[in-house]
Structure formats: C-alpha cells, structure tokens
Amino acid sequence: MPAPHKRDTAPSSTQGESPGAIPSHPDTHPAPTADAPPRPSKSQRKRDAHALQALGAQLVALPPAHLARLALPDALHEAVVAAQSMRSHGARARQMQYIGKLMRQLEPAALRLVLEALETACAVAKRL
Image 1 (spheres, rainbow, N blue to C red):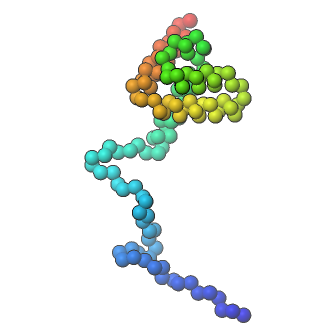
Image 2: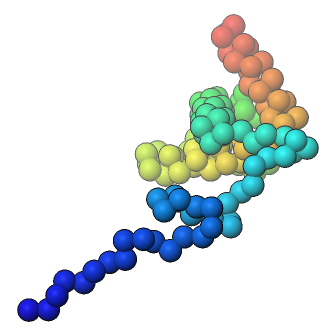
Image 3: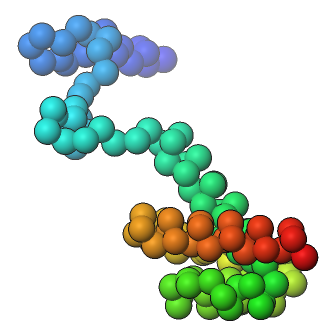
C-alpha cells in the first residue's frame, strides 16, 4: 500500500505576512484619499436604486393624461408608457427594472424636476 501524501505544513509566505494571513491582491481598490469624495456604500447604493424604482412605479401608476403633462426624457417616457401596456407579470417586472436603470442614469437636476412634477401631479390627483 502506498504511503499517504504529506502536505507541506508551512505555506510559502512572503516577508512580513503571518502564515494564516489572507494574501492581498494587487487588483483591490486602494483606500480613498483625502482629495477623493467617499463613495457611498453598496447598501446605500441599493437603497437609492430601490427608491428610484419605487418612483418609477409611481410614474407607471399615473394616468396617461397626467403622464403626458410631465417633462420626462423621451426614453423614460417611452419606457413608462410601455410598462403601462404590459400585463404579463414577468415582462412588467423587467420593464420596471429598466425604468429604474433609466432613472439612475438621469442627471440630478433632471431627476429633481421629475420628482417635483410627480408631487404636483399627485397633489392635483388628490384634489379631484
């Protein structure tokens, strides 16, 4: 019977590393410098994306007459109109993801205008 294979018990390590240390990878991102603004955390980016998707759902829920009065970018307006006509749950979910993506690509000023217009449209709808 052959002898069992013996593993090296001491891993090859570079100077200054402990044997159980996780090696650092050269492709990792360096720490932010004092000049660069801190990047939002992944959780914060996800919360922002979900908030924009919820805003897109509010746009889809608007009646076509209110939607026509909003000053939306053409691509976003077309995506919202397409989502309104979709009845399949899967297709509508994909379209809502796409609307969220379009909302994330908007400039902050354009997004602010959409928010203000949506709030105005909702206020008018509540009065009726």
